[in-house]
Length: 347
Image (cartoon, rainbow, N blue to C red; front, side):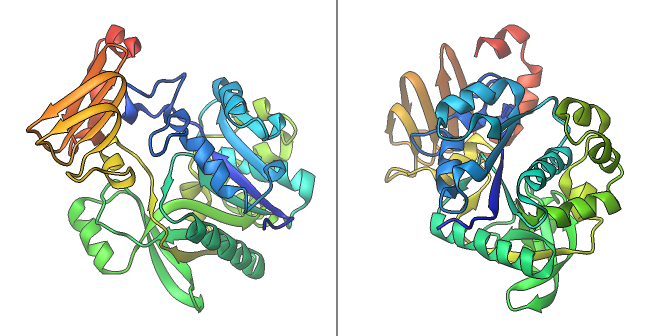
């Protein structure tokens, strides 16, 4: 059952270059069926329907994606799909969403911010963590993040160091750490750090107060352009919400979450979140894997046959075939930037 004053804000921007050649600016990662048979953004919204009614769901995306998302999610009010005039980071996007909600539902409305491109193994546990975070945010008038209990020392993720306990299961945040090297990630996992999932929950009035107090990159624009998204985005400076608000505020709390969260950041990540065959292959489309183990294959068109290989990523789409290793699938942005434009744009 959704709470009447809970709002969900889903961040669904970006181009997903690490999922080339399937992902393109016109059809980015969040619109693709990477984990299930449905696009990631559809899975995301459906998981959240029991947390907030779709009338209290905002989707923040690129201007060019408003209509494609509206077509995928026809019951979400069209006016709730908001196009950012330009990408300036999560700080301005969430500030605009918070003041949008406050204008309609008051400063006490609780805003739950998530991303559209995650995989969640335990949807019920995920929703329970969001509701707990919402209760903590309202009770303590604080900004709450859900830190995910690490399952591996991943250098591609940010980390949170919990501090003193405020009440059972609720701790203050000592600091945020951006993408450490592997040795430091291993040490932080041993020391009880949590992954910075990007799940943020707060009353909109509390969040806007902290922006006014700590975020000069955004605050003046909120005061002068709160009714004009174009003017607002023209006036703010790029900044993430982590750097612009959370790292500067003294009102940040963390609760731990363990619900099979994965940010699905690379092709290789699909080996963790897709169903796999007996040999550990995660496949989509017409794929035959013979004496092949632990591969990730996505065949949008045509047939892919693997024989005697392991730990590969193979993606086939419209005459373009990508072959790399699972280990190097995180480097696709570098690869795409190095390709001739005619190849980049062919996909």
